[in-house]
Length: 183
Length: 183
Image (cartoon, rainbow over all chains, first blue to last red; front, side, top):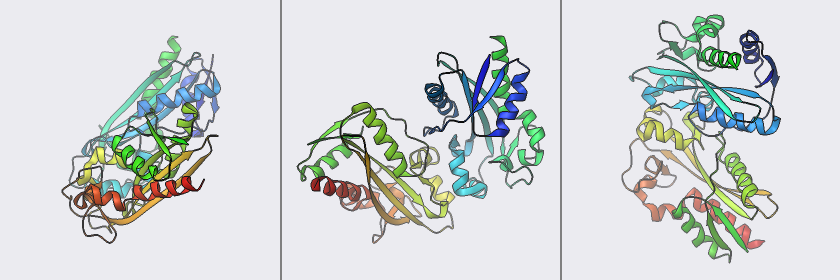
């Protein structure tokens, strides 16, 4: 069986390939230009994206999307984190949260469209806290301001290798791989 | 000639009808469920929306969309203002801007799809400032924290009637009406 991973991110693809190869699933990377819908909910955005990609490719495929839900901001920005960070930066986010509780949740959703275009989602979550400083190290999106539960350092300081072992994406991808293997 | 205004907002429709009737254009309201794309740029979001609506209706139509660009937040949130306000509230926005310059711009875009589905946009802008308090009065979206240039009060305090006379939407709608009349 062959499944397409719709992503423009080669790093994500390699990570997924390593995981899914254990399940005897052939993985192929494909880039499709997709407008994301304007919604905070990662699950909803990923689902619509998978449906759209299927309407183009007509073959079994999946997409993966992430979000950061900050409790003090009533769950903002969720999937809108890309735009939020791009505009106000990590410093801006820390400013909006001055004196607020730090609780947050990192979420990754794999949305899989099967041969008929029916979509199934796999949700990986990591609870944690927003740091009150910008962590040095592996610079990726909001990795430098998110401290996963049970740790004292941000994802950025923990480093990519260890992060990939415990991350929200690792969880969603693993759930997906296990399910796929069982089919 | 008849043009459809795609909106679920009856107030917006009445406002547009009053403006466009002067141009001898028949206006009809139509509601179409449209997923907005995830983008800060109002013009881009409105354009995609008009194209999508045309793919459903296949008749001349327009949509109208707004955004608030806050300079201190590097133009954030633009068209994402709905989600931003919904999550962190007007208080949250004021907090993110503590001690920052207040300059902002309110933008309205009318995107018109003609009988062939070609899209033309009309952009209305009002410069102004983010207040450092929440204005009492006409409660609508961010009206209570935006002070238009040349005024000392927020849109909320100015009131709906006066606001509709000077607003970004009034400008974009007027540009559109004038253009339509000249066709």
